[in-house]
Image (cartoon, rainbow, N blue to C red):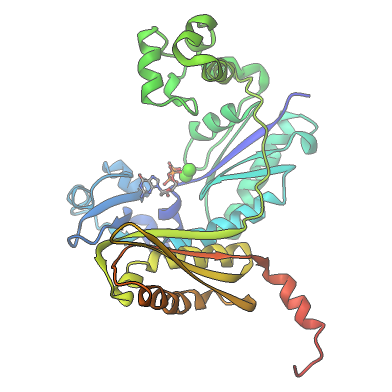
Length: 366
Ligand code: DGT
Ligand code: CA
Ligand code: CA
């Protein structure tokens, strides 16, 4: 049976989450920024809503430039809150994952899914399923998304990018070559600047030209593996399956400090974002941790780790920060070097739900 693969991508994700939380932002340009902290406005735009994009403000632009372009347009300039986006992401993924045959999250706001069996390979039925997924996400989280359907992961990914925001693009097996053919090769997943330059030298600019390129010439330039991937991608015949995600065994983040320091409060102050991200992942996945570790890369680049294992899994993600502070102090007590980078890791994860059911079995009053 021809497969039906989907790719889901949430629209202007971080900025849309901010809009949902504060609907009055919807009429203004919204810019979510990563402040580096060096000077007040140093840093870059992480993402922006479509009003801001219309004024030339998108991912990667320096904040200073973004502010200049948005002057007089009443922009909302918001600090990125990774933990918050992780929580929303986890809820969306959980929701969608339960409504398809197979589900593979590939990023904070995107995932592949397979609906071949439940649609019996029918593209009309699959389109209905995809529309229902979009509706569910909109009703439960208030977020619009863009979905692409096709016979392979490459086709689905190109399709989800084809109409944005709030798009639904269905590429039937019969229309695959027509759909892909006219696009520039850069639209294919895995075709970066280096590959594009070489293809250009071979006079291959569109996907159709790639699909018809001489296989032996491609192999000479790219080797066997990459050249066969490129041909399959261009023809929409790549067989890469949707591989369900493994249960996470740990969550961790590491941060390079602005300057080397032995001041634990200062170090942890710069870790706020990382701590929030880990807490978001714990809450979003419904996991509790038993072991918390801090990892310090010291000024001489040596690495020290300090861990604490709890008797019972911690249900409350809020404890991560305070416990990390204690561990960090212990870590520094054993050295006279300063901290250069600090990592935080929670591991030995268990499902929070299992513990509450476990405690139900304990005699009351204990
Ligand atoms: P879209 O999908 O075109 O409507 O817009 P986004 O913002 O969802 O873009 P996407 O899917 O490429 O990226 C998802 C999130 O990842 C986005 O909301 C913020 C973050 N992100 C994307 N590009 C950058 C970047 O260049 N720098 C940083 N710091 N974050 C980025
Ligand atoms: Ca997106
Ligand atoms: Ca994305």
